Amino acid sequence: MDSPNLFTALAYYTVSGFLDPIQWLISGLCGWSVERLDQAMIAGAAMVSVLFIVLAWFYPDGKLFSFPTPHVGIAILGKTIGAAVMTALIHWLKQRQLNRKKS
Image 1 (cartoon, helix red, strand yellow):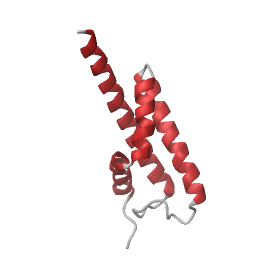
Image 2: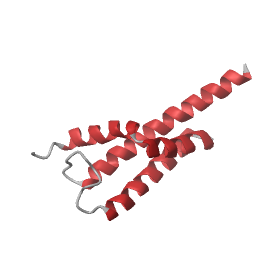
Image 3: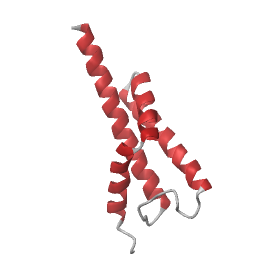
Image 4: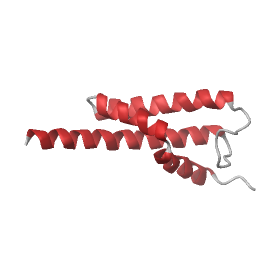
């Protein structure tokens, strides 16, 4: 099977982050516990990227990622973008819930 282009691989790993329970846990913790949105997104993205960098170290043959990628960094970048979006979503839901309680 030929290697897909970079955009396809990046989109696949960004969307696949929404199916990863560990990524939801990390994003949930960061999105719910941090006050500011920018700090929450940076924290969630950083934690997920460090997790996958460490996991890629233990799986050097590319067995960690199911979709063929031109470079493992594209997969990690896609997971990081997904984590930032998920963290922003959880932070928005928290703010919405808090505003609803105040009313």
